[in-house]
Image (cartoon, rainbow, N blue to C red; front, side, top):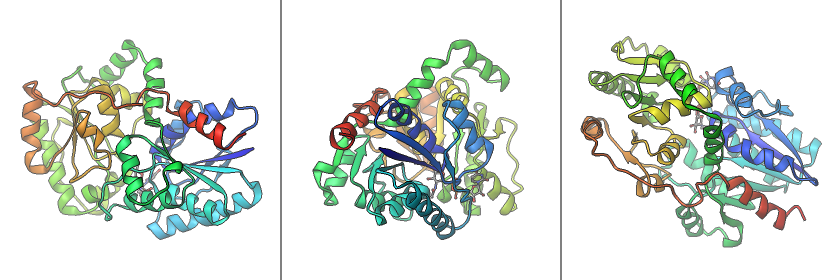
Length: 364
Ligand code: UD1
């Protein structure tokens, strides 16, 4: 039985790794890894294969960057060729990036069974490319594996048949648990020392959403906010290539204060060390809202909404605006921040639950 696992962009790798290793243990299953090449820089892609001890992908489509249509189109065409050659029994797609949608579509058009891991998340903001990707891929997936109960509710409301929906928990947390086990205090201290940081005495920043970094005005405002924060405590900012390129493209000569330390994208383990020891994280990423919730680190999400409301209802996450962000920082500094707990099934055993369902329904 052949199963193609599709990855393409940075957040996909951590979601695929735990499931791939479990699939590999099944006698009847031959798991194949296909990398679309949506992300291609060493630090956005290869590094995660090294970090998770993943084998080199069996297929690499080399799709690269471009407009949505160019990128999505190239992936559909490339993946269809692989599907026609391999004739897999199942395709598994992860998350909500363009590769998820493109490969899901190509598979379904050839009537190949499709599983979507991280189904049912909704921001209800159709201006986000990820929202379009998720909604469409959920519509035609055969197995919808959800990270939280509210995601299941979203899918039921959209008319998805309940037999297709399986609440299995958060697969990203499987990877997080895995890496936490491999990490020790001396590694964490070494990372902090290398960047001149002290435990709980710095903020971690990630910003890369088009709404925050593609428009000159918003980008400038966000940079100003970071400078303001840096008057109070140092910040470490592993900058996404989209943000870096926009600063250049939009000709922004706005200087960062000394306290804002810009670095290149970091390895998964390094990032988790930064997050675990930070006073807070300011982000617009989806996965980081979840990781901060698991690690009980205050998380400020610089977005008007989130597709992961459970991180607000049960975790440490809060939505912030440029206007109220400084107030939130003051609260954190005075120890008055929103504590949280770990949502159900965010326990490192999600891949195991997925395998059980696939075994019963599919690998018989
Ligand atoms: C993509 C996902 C987003 C996810 C993010 C995580 C979509 C629509 N968006 O956004 O949901 O949160 O990945 O990182 O799929 N670039 C490089 N090197 C790389 C990859 C990208 O320099 O290895 C630059 C290119 O200039 C490219 C830009 O980043 O044009 C954006 O890349 P793209 O894959 O289109 O979207 P992301 O912003 O990375």
